[in-house]
Image 1 (tube, rainbow, N blue to C red):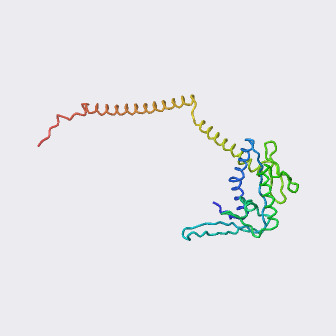
Image 2 (image 1 turned 90 degrees about the vertical axis):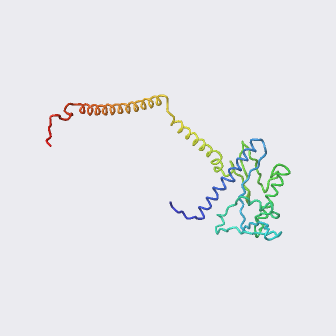
Image 3 (image 1 turned 180 degrees about the horizontal axis):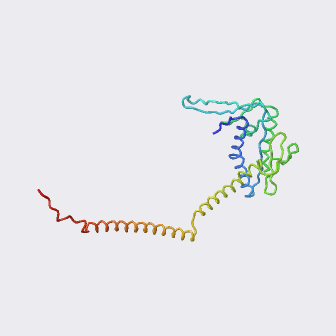
Length: 256
């Protein structure tokens, strides 16, 4: 076993792998299901990352403290390299519900750039609720396209917003939603073929039966030979016991 130190790069790739499996790939499957059922879908990837520190705020109540609600605030770990900071699952909530969450992400200080992101995101969501289109009027020249089978596109919500073709975070979703299924089917088929290869054909069964009969015949021959040898030994012993030479002499006189 080799101990590998947990560097920032390893931690980042592990988190990215977990996010792809638990969030990105399932989200794409849900998008595909909606599209197949004829529903209007506007997919997006929230890539905006604030430059200010991020605080996670939770409110909890414990019976030991009575009815008082405790406020727990945790400050996110800051990275020295700003370019290495990436948006994470749920960060967009900080720009939609800035207050009122029992568990919420707070950004302090909330900069002009953050307010611009919040305005853009809430406007697009409001437009979608009212008109079924996030950008009935382009936002600073940006038009959010719907995700369809004929034209798979999604929005990258950042400043400025962009468009990307294909499924979310391609080829990640293609691997987890399609290729892994093929690998699983191949593994199942391989196991089935291995199982079938263990089964004997009719010809092999006949040969095996012949080998078994020959094996038992050999043992019977050995037993018969052993019996013959034992009978021969018994006959020799009995014959010698009844031989005249084996009888005691009557012409021997012993003086007393």
